[in-house]
Length: 593
Image (cartoon, rainbow, N blue to C red):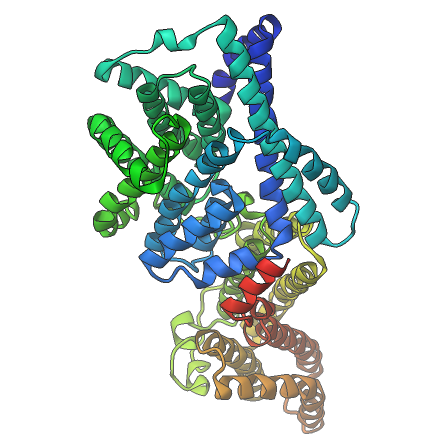
């Protein structure tokens, strides 16, 4: 809704300006082409890396300094802080990353975005960059016709670079032509009033364009053509940094709590950095002039100086806030806490991460565990057992002696807590598969099968609980014993699954799981033998026998599905295939591609 109010007048003004000014139309075209290039670059790296980028970030962010460095390197390479932010949010959602490390990645990404400024100032303004753009676009299109995702990804990256170079060329030509007709530099303002006005203009530009990289590229080409004074260009760069906070906040509105917390952290970081830069802008200008002599930047090369200024304020901003990161995290963790119980709603699925295959699979894995938890708790209640006892160290034969009199409405719980969750997981997998290669899709398919197995247990436990309620209150000790065995059999597997989940690789848990698998296969036959003996000796009547026979089948199905679910989630865990490679292998794959 906010974007509609912002964009409507912008569209009208843009349409008017393009119609009556060819130079402005050229500049606007350059911005549009530049942004198309950024989109192609982002999409290309998603396909080109084959998940290596996510693997690298996942394995190199266990400390704050590593997180900052990883965020910097990744953003400098892929030229997309939004892509890095999406991966970070997905890892936070899946609880694979601490909030402090997620903030570190975002801080590093801010430094990484300065690479765009250096590309524009170092290459875009010093050579006929459009000559390199055309071959990149041509070969980029050719690579798109290949079937292999890696090749297509490389094609997208070439297209992205080509469009970025072409966009820079258009912006450069537009400002040079504009200068002959209108000299915008005459509107330059000195003093802190001028600084404030140009900061606001820079922020507004970024909010409208929705890309700080495009805004910085625009500012650099403008200052290089003399349309903007040097000191005013510094203020515009500060404003561009501030403007990204609005973009981040708008993007986080539909995100989860961690996405919103990251947006707040980004806002605090950028606001403090901007305040510092505005107060000390003249000292920072002198620092840039002084540092330029050491890095070989010519006195008249304003574009390169602006890139250096942009880098310095981002590095200083990170350096200033690092000592307060722990306090910032504590503050952020008090925000966006949902006090009510969100039953039946996904905890980890986020549409922001659906285009990132590895991140999407991590979210799917976690959400499948969430679905399993909902169903296993329902089953324990349907068995009329106490949850805290089933998941305790107490002997199971002692646990099943307890019988809760409170009944549970399985159908109601299914509708309120399970059905919608199951539906959203399946829908998320289907949507995510569009962006996955064959290997990733095969893993997604495994999770679909596992979710179906988990949900199928609800139907069986609904039928089973009816007779449990009847016969556990029966005066016939033989039928009561049989239903206690059924309760114990299911509860044993649930407990062992939980132990395997908490202790991956534990040999006793794995052995118990394999033993349960063997027992499930024999269960129905053994129960039929016991049933024959009970009938022959007239220990139970025909009605009891019929119920027990049907419930033995239900128990077998439930047990088998419990074992299969645990096998997929915690024994064979399809996600492990993406963790087995070392970080060096992932990086080699990333570079080799």
